[in-house]
Image 1 (cartoon, rainbow, N blue to C red):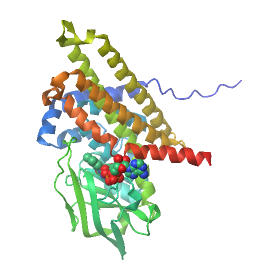
Image 2 (tube, rainbow, N blue to C red):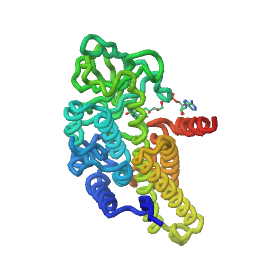
Image 3 (cartoon, rainbow, N blue to C red):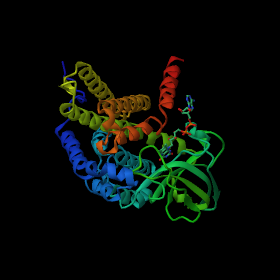
Length: 389
Ligand SMILES: Cc1cc2nc3c(=O)[nH]c(=O)nc-3n(C[C@H](O)[C@H](O)[C@H](O)COP(=O)(O)OP(=O)(O)OC[C@H]3O[C@@H](n4cnc5c(N)ncnc54)[C@H](O)[C@@H]3O)c2cc1C
């Protein structure tokens, strides 16, 4: 009998993947972790370190090599974002949004567009933002109202985007706009460059976490955008936006795993040192059981995220559902593990110097953005019900 080709073993990383993972962890240990608490306090956006990450190939991880990308897989990207997030989830998460936006141009742009924008994004000479959410359209993104009206070889764009990561600092904005009627089919995607007349930004939002990256509103008032800046055809913008989010959700899930892993490691070393009732904390069985549960939950989430990443790499028909499931599990479990690690530090966990409370604050938003975890359930449930009909 002919031997069938062995399926890729998702439970064992290849030598190359181990090298990629270790490179990202070393980078996080040396260039991110020592500064993360200070960056958070000062609301410092670490542009220099992001460019250093790009110099190692992390600016366009799953972008094609002919335009400066690294040509790696979604699973490789998940390994990288998890490791970077052990240093700072907020920094890793911005890089994930930059990668998502850059990939959208690489994947849906024509040759001229790819060559014009992607090389400087992959090197992070330029930074990118993803602009979908509006003040009146969050979970129901297809209700967006930012209008792009065709005028000769330009669109005139008017409207506002809300909660845009990197806004004001980014050079390239991948913007979902309405060029047609109501609903998803009336949406198109435009690339809008910083400095365009009529493009302006709100104040940096004061927020619970993710203080290492700016979040601002983006306002368009009569912004003239060349038609040649449109990705794909008119009406394809919602599909493009959702395709970006499949990978974006894996990346955010990976950032939660990394933050939680760092919190777990901090708890372990703290429990070795700290004594109560004449014993080290790690000698109490109740705490040992909790540690075991934390590690188990994290490993389950990680294994599932890798499965979803492999499905996206393989363009599996159920990849969107698997990415939604993975995002929910990884961000929920990640937050819970980080919060448990804070509890194990007692009062010290609440102090900024221990670095735990920042992780908890950073991970909380991963349950909200790139689609809330309620919307992840909606995606899964709709697919189940559709299969049943
Ligand atoms: C720090 C930060 C950074 C962000 N960065 C970006 C970015 O870079 N680009 C971008 O485009 N957006 C970004 N977002 C926006 C984010 O994606 C939205 O906040 C998110 O999608 C939720 O939308 P909303 O806030 O309008 O909540 P709403 O849609 O108003 O939802 C409110 C609540 O109702 C629930 N809900 C809504 N509809 C349903 C339903 N049908 N069934 C069950 N529950 C439902 C939601 O889950 C949520 O709990 C960011 C947000 C934050 C906080």
